[in-house]
Image (tube, rainbow, N blue to C red; front, side, top):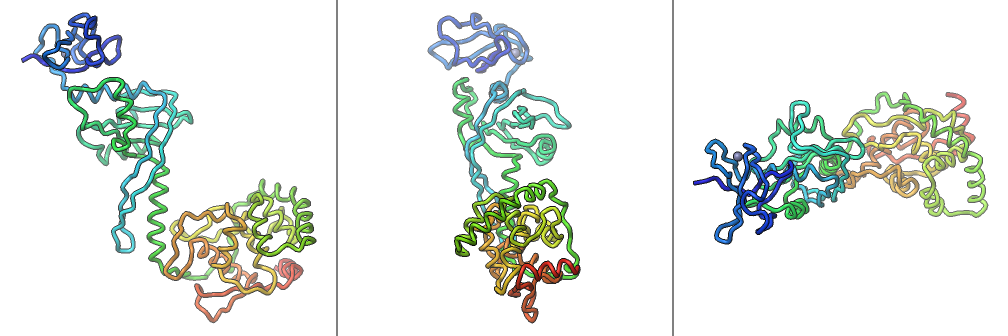
Length: 413
Ligand SMILES: [Zn+2]
């Protein structure tokens, strides 16, 4: 029996037999050749059988496989596109944490991608994705068109090495009789066919999910305070602190205005939350009578010990001096949980921790990070606490009644 298939080649483009004209494209008039052997094809566009191509002269050595052709057709049609929307997906995610097996599906938003270039079967370093696109920002996006087996770990590792994004399109359930060019667009819009292979946003979502699970089962403790008495200076945020210095006169004027108004603590906190991060630092420096260009190391120090430690991701200069303005001077007693709640409103852009659960001992992620900072300040002589309690249970109080006391201390150290 002669070989029948659904795709031919014309002017270097794919032609689906179902897209031909039933009258004018009959037989050899279709002008198509075989993708495998390059010989002319006849289009059989009758009423008795499903439309199909056959070699005009039968060749036993050429036997195009319908699924292979379909795969190559979709691959090459995809490569012609200069934009693509990967629909919103729900990606399964399971992991083991705290002795529990978690299933935590991730909702990944739709990605609208624009390409400057696209090609199929481009050879990269040790790997050849089905389709490779170049994104407008110069990054690479690979698509694997799946019709038999999924991408294996080894190939995935190689793709990950050279592409910042990669996804798999599953076409394994499409009919061997083929689909039209128009149908490709529909296939691409079907969320169930897509799966992300490489995507930094999903990596981040996975980290957050595992961190949340781990944190909810952590009885947070400070392992040791050895070394806390020596401030660990962060890289200086020179440009930002210069900007804060320029804004200092305005910050002083604003503080005077607010104090004349007799603004409440809650209103002051809300007002601070609406300010820009650098202006907030200027305000704190104005209140503490500090020079942003000569910011003491206590207010710009690294506080965390390791990657899985609670940490505030933003530069220390942008939150430590502001926190000290609120808690470092006066008579109040306060916990790090209270400080974290204040900071969440007074500097919301600094405290945007993705870990939203509480530890077993009721620390939010940021409260734990702040607690460790407070313990450092205590070891460095800038705060006091009830040191009869264990480290995690400390309630802090300021060491300085007035800003002048702080300056006496800074002058002495
Ligand atoms: Zn052929």
